[in-house]
Length: 549
Image (cartoon, rainbow, N blue to C red; front, side, top):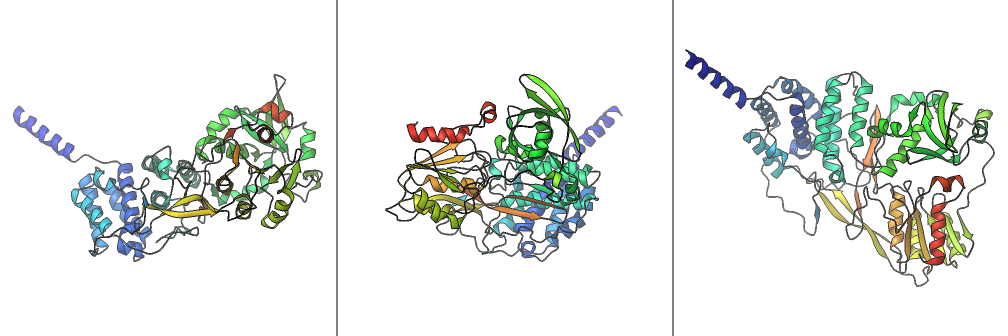
């Protein structure tokens, strides 16, 4: 009898071990990948023959009931079969002259996922080999919402949350140029986000989960704006100055509302150590996973904007001055409201000069306010200078081409790109790129200096790459935002987000994403320099012009 009991136990254990239960996260992770793969690869699905979101909603209850990998694979296999026969096509031959960029491309999960039967993997590989083909080319106006309607979903139910997460994850999986340089693998982000989405008690919990997922893109172009919160904009109050985070402190860099700053004795160079009893270090840790940036300087630049806004009028701010800590109970206002005189920004500021000649015959150009129509006058005024400083610590206004023709003696390529290949989603291909300059014997012969910092984003970085081809260019400053390329906008009814759509590289294929434009001479502002009212980056540029060092 004991032998029979032991034999039964062993047999039962073998059955359990051979058919282990699978978790909800494992099932949904696998489903997300299959759903996204079919969305872009299956000929009938990609063509739009199905309401693909509804198909997912219909299959989710079945997936929820699946207890073993065999049950899961059978559900998936039957689902694929229900879509109709996939016609066998002639072997797809790569286009002649096309060079592929495959650092983002990985369909190995088709054969390695432990939930997939051999038959399921075989069906998926067959679809890959006979995938949907299109001549459509992705461009700056790429519309990402294919075969789906995400504008009427509400997130008070689990199914809508899952559909939205799956849409977003697969969009990034197949069409985000810089997936390969994320700190955390995108697969892991999916696995970690699914439980947050399932456990969300309300829309706010869901938005937080999505923001955390978006933060893992490590892309300074990414923003995440929730429309329902816009109703609180009218109640927002602001610190009366701009600041910069340095050494886990905030330093006042610019007064924005003179009278308000004066009433609280706020001056440029003041050091802030706490806001509402939270240290700046603690605030950085609290919001780090909710904001997205390519690198640390860019992240801190985004966070500072959050720290200087409050939904309350009364804010306690701790200052450090002469080694002593002092807490001020401040009243913050919406001083942007021009209809209320007491909240105006104060006296009209002196208008900034687009360009000028500094001492020692050195030209200076503020690229943030220089417009295309100003370029001819700028060239005429500065062409006889011994050096020109182009200040790109801002966002320029499309003036790169006309300026490059002035700086360069010849046309020079300064950037090449990677674009998604719609005929093989997940793969990217190299494109010709962009050139600047023209044949010009009278090009500028003096030194070209470009100033950059963490506020130099996208077009600023791209413009700097263009100016580097002049041959006599020196980059001075600190790490840029590290997000070059166009922006893909995702505008839903409930929220808006975005990401970088194409890859931007130097002609020799050096990367710019996350790295930014590497300065030849690194200079960062100091607290002491700010307190003394100095522009240390510009000072270093002027020293280099005079000394060559």
